[in-house]
Amino acid sequence: MNNKDIQIRLLQALLDEITRKYDYFINLQQETIEKTHEMAVKDHLTKLYNRMYLEDYLRRLIKMSKRDKAVFQILFIDLDNFKPINDIYGHEKGDQILKEVADFLRQKFRDYDIIARLGGDEFCVVLEEEIDQDRIEEIREEFEKTFSQYNLSFSYGVANSKELDYSKDEDNIIEDILKLADERMYKQKMQRKGWSFSHQPN
Amino acid sequence: MGELSSGYKKGEEVLTYQFVEDKVIKNGFFILTFDNIAFDIRIALGFKPYGITYRVQKAEGYRIYTVDENQPLSYTIRSLMSKIGTNDIKHLWFCPITILDDQEGYVATMRTFKDVKDDYVEFFGPVKEGQHFKLSFATEKELLEESEKVAMEAKEVMKHPDLVFDFSCLARQYVLGEFQQREPEIYTAILDAPLFGFFTYGEVGPNKLYKKLKFYNQTSLLLSIKEL
Figure (cartoon, rainbow over the protein chains, first blue to last red):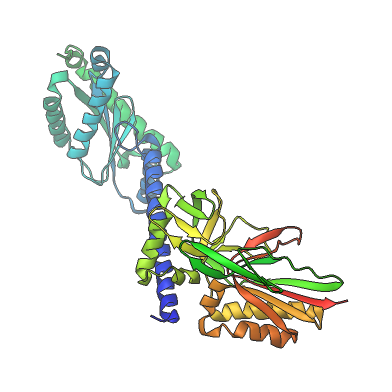
């Protein structure tokens, strides 16, 4: 092996080392970006999207909807009988149940539906296709079976993008649609109150 | 300025020999002084740092044990040697390390590879913990261009020196390969004076401000003197 061969091999080895290190840092950077993004947009406990991401997503959806009249729905979910779980079993158990609820919702909706935890035991699903009430009732029935040990159920309210006033700015429209779905959920909860609050966890 | 003269390796020890009048001195220290002269000192390097920056984590004397996050440097260097397809440490004289933190030198402070053991890499000069370094590289052409540049600078200052000394690193000669002869030829041609010198295992020269001495590797030290 002459000096030229050695020099060429040496440069190749240096390049190889640089490439390896470069790939390492690019992957590390990517992981950091993903982790930071995850922390910024996901709820720490349930790993569902957080309220900030939900509003950001809705803002984009409303802009698209203004342009091409695309229809979407908001499903507002509030758990029934969750508070007694915290009171009886403690917050650790309560957190565990919330994680299981999140898993249940992930299974029942499509990958591209945006499921967010708004806080406490409130959840919101953004559906880019209309969902009929029977399907939601089916989901609730399955939910009650899954969490029968805790007599857990949920009330819900649905708001449709067709009901919105698109002359308003995006932030006001977001406020309107969430309020509308929340009010409907609350109305349903009141109607179900007799059933809901007569049951306590086993 | 001064140099570590090359010598005879006996076991792990390298014996150096100096000659004074009719005496031979083993492993001695020889000081030669001149009075009533004008002088100019230049240092030629030519290597440039490339690639990854390493941080010395554990070092002792001339040895680096680990770099970065507890990574044995010997592992990285052995991997490099394996990619080159060699066990000969001299092949790494093509890529001495450049100490990046040391900005005091007339030229960058390089360290030439001396040995690679299981748990450390040894150099022909001291390294300190916390220092950052890169591997470096130069072609024969780049080394000779640098030698030519310093000779031209010396010529500009000294005009017609009476005597020129060149103390050039043995590893530098190795990199120059078949062009070894070109360096003294360049000095002689440009400075047009008798040239004396020898190959070294490390060169002692001035720092950037000519106030302190520094220990260099892979350089050629050019001293031009003229009687006043």
